[in-house]
Length: 437
Image 1 (cartoon, helix red, strand yellow):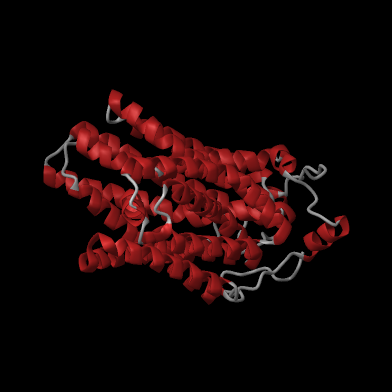
Image 2 (spheres, helix red, strand yellow):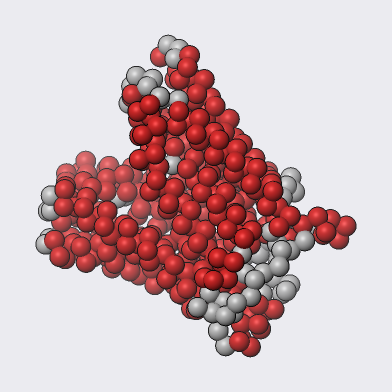
């Protein structure tokens, strides 16, 4: 391996530009995501029904494109693909105000959706491409904090734009998004990747990546890690999908509590996310155990919802307990996310990292797609039932992470290389080797 192992304090070449770019693009995302249907309705002039149908179809198509994005990362490198996606998103939002017909809107929406859905795969791959060791955990935490802060700022910014120009301001917002993505791409272009010399030499001698998706499908520990993340990802969907319905239908609480909960979550993620992740990193905990702790905190928050839904105290007590539950939930998110993200990046062989992470990111996409129907069906039976299911899935994820620990590569489990005496405790699992597909 190369000597470019990153310690927690080591700076990545071009790191500041990368983080500023992430923050700027997050502002752009925050300017349209909270108003998606309304945004595209006013920008294009099409009906809400037609906009919703196009967004659904193009979103599904975007999911199908993710494996191809992983292949592109392995073939061309994460940085190059990242820049291409930023350019596509910038061009797409610049064109939205001119896409007044259904075919034009469908075409622009499809191309933009392909870039949006694949972006998480490419960004995770970029972290693996530019950072090593504990620097990956630190970047994961910093990026998540900036994304939350940027999206919050974007939502406030578009509110001001609409207050000044009315719904016509959505057009200016679209062009503002295009500018944000273009600036982010320019900044990210300054990042310099580092590569493991052993993996580079192996790939170079073969003339191509040593394996394709068959290698991923034969890697049982990584598939187990992906399955465990699917269980946790259902919990990530709870705040946005289940929480508002639970408040209004089971607790009969005012809708304003949903806004308060989102505010607490966003402020904590943006304000203390890096501090919490740094504390976890400095503790020397293995990534599998940190991610498992995050899942356990999720489970504790879900149990709190069950208790609250059973007791149903007065409005004041409900407010206090709900906010306390949201704090515990957010703490679980802050502990799990950096460790889980760095674990997946580091468990993927460099030459096929894009394919591995495309597979891993599907766990989030599938959980997000399943969550609305699952939660509403369970909520129709009993308001506490979805929280009980989420408690079981979170506990299952924690247990799976602990059981997978000794089967995953040591460089994935440990942010820093373990002492020689502990090496046998986390010996790297053998990687399957098959021809490329």
